[in-house]
Image (cartoon, rainbow over all chains, first blue to last red; front, side, top):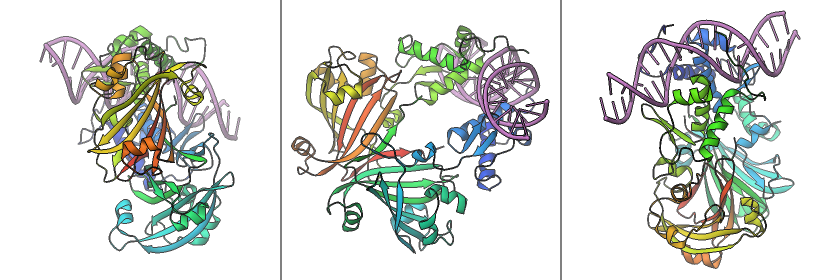
Length: 249
Length: 249
DNA sequence: AAGTGGTCTAGACCACTAC
DNA sequence: TAGTGGTCTAGACCACTTA
């Protein structure tokens, strides 16, 4: 049969990419939230006036980007950052023998402050913008291993308090999602060595000047919007950071 | 119309995955090599007795894994590690201001030796197996930044000589591909901090004990076969290592 | 103009999940 | 049993490359 409406849009963009954008827009607008289901593929295909194959190609990409999760027989869901394997996509420190463990967190500091130039650049903020800055000490298998210094824009995290952070029940990105409807879907990380300053040395129980791994991360939400700037100081005496790793499939 | 041969294999494996394996097998057998083209999709679909849609789904995955590259209007090619963007998939050190540069290499050492236990484990070698071990000093923008200590199995690199390595015209993985038909398609990397030993300090022109980034990499070919073990020592005073980075698409 | 991969369709059937 | 996503087909047409 002949295609009815090839290239129905003004631009030459493929249909499935237009559908993908539309779904992404609905997602960003909060039309479907949390771990709950999207409409069935058949309905979505009707809504966007495309064939089911085209709709599926759009969803395929969103699933590959860990934005959606499909379950055969159940439905398609907004990806959720809980304490499953998905967690280790963003937590990339393991013991040198390979053992993975969930970290335990102790909140060390919390304050509201003007963003300095570096933070403004990383978070794409205007001059004078405020951020919440907080420091977490993370332990693995009882060892104090990581100090995270985290800055998030006040505009996105209105009314964030020390108590919320100290008492959150689950992971940090899960908390972002539950309390502020912010979904971290991508990160960009750069790694250097640094010498431990006095604060880090005290927290990690190492001598000042001890070499540490410094991981500098920007976390992004749907439209490449930066939502968090994080500097992690890691003691790699018994642990290590997972860099590139595509030895799968 | 009714599907002719649903589930033609004994197992319940999807057809497109069977096709993918078959293509991978042909690739590993050297049926198509280097940067040259595979047969057209139509022919491949006939050869494997599947519809073109199914064939495409198999090729889609191989392309996503950077094993094949498709060019509209030209054909489908075996991925090649040359001096283009693809190079930076495996070379992940950039200047702190973000500038990317191709490294220049100086071969420092070369020898044939028995693999020690760690190397045997990483390369899945038997006791007593030999490897070629060599050391490269890499410079970026004129700065001596990286010392790579590399071990490859003798069985895969029969007759490798110092001269070949010193005079190779292109990148190392390109050389593996051209001279030994070994395609690096995936890596697994772990990162730590280490103190520079005397050799590294001399080569990188830093004081002994200076903290360095240590990246430990296993490189894999088609069937998850390990083909190279590499330890990179990096001076991150002006450069940094690119960790996770999925802030695209 | 011929040949390649890229997009899109319409619909059948399978596998899994919920009720 | 009904509803969901997963697989597979057959073929039309588009966009790009090469000659």
